[in-house]
Length: 156
Image 1 (cartoon, rainbow, N blue to C red):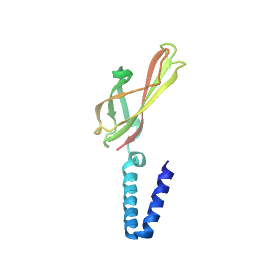
Image 2 (image 1 turned 120 degrees about the vertical axis):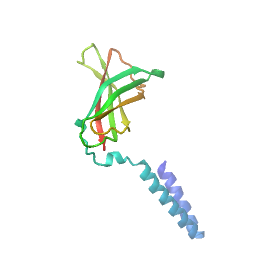
Image 3 (image 1 turned 45 degrees about the horizontal axis):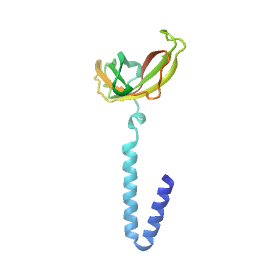
Image 4 (image 1 turned 90 degrees about the vertical axis):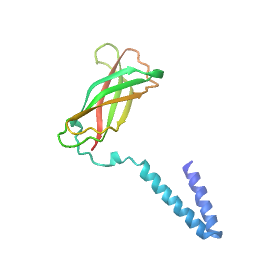
C-alpha cells in the first residue's frame, strides 16, 4: 500500500515538474520536511539512548493484579530506584500471565504478556507508585493464574 502511494506521489511530482517546476520542487521540499518530522516524532529515542541505570538497580515492590472493567486487569506496584545518584525517567515493565495446573509454579504455561512503558520520574534512592490498566483479551486460564513482573529497560 505504501509503495502504491509513493508511486502516485512520484508520478504527480513528475507531471508537475514538466509544467510547473517551481511548484513541484516546493511540494517535494514539503514532503521531505514532513517525512523528516514523522521520523523524528515516531522514533523511539528511549531505545536508542544509552541507559546509565542498570536494570538491577530498579525493583518492583508489592506488585498486585486485580480484576478491572471489561475483563481487564489493574496493575499496581511501587517502583524503587535503588541507584544513589541517577534519576530514573522511564522504564518498561514486562508483565507475564501464567496458567498453572495447581497452586505451585511448576508446569505453568504463558498465556499472556504485556510490556508497559512507565514514564514516571523516580529520583535517586526513592520510590513512586505505579498503576496501569491492561488487557489480555485472548487469555483464558484453565487453572490457577500466576503473574511474573520484571523491569526490562530503563532510561535516565
